[in-house]
Image (tube, rainbow, N blue to C red; front, side, top):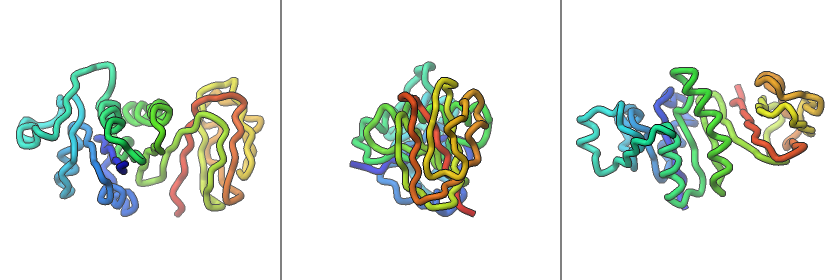
Length: 209
């Protein structure tokens, strides 16, 4: 069982906490052009995944033994990397560099976390310099320090979420816009979200200032 890090080609991690995740990974899978950023940082990836359309010929030649190439246009490079990670007996998967850069890439990558978390038994999270995203698909109780800022994003306006342990109750929120349950805060050391029916929900935990 391995701690696997996937490095996407968005904003390269700059915080010490996120760089420690990168440095301590058992396996690092780079998405295509992110390889050059990682090598410049001083680490050679374990694998390189993607369609190789943006990775320089020089890097492709030098690290050809590490490359898992897929030209499928139905999935992006992040999903290609995640599909590879699933075959490596992961104990946990952290996705870094998935935000920053083009906003459409950022939104697409974050939304994919719902699919990724549902497809593996191990924990999956998307970590940025500002916090982390996780996905849940049913009622859940999560531990978290008091005063941690939490945002909840759902994509089903028929969904009801009863909350306990949050500063602002979500019981009457209609999830018809992404801002509706953002910028909440924990009031206890754990909080519970009770979903009216199974549904994909994204949670963002902001780093404490």
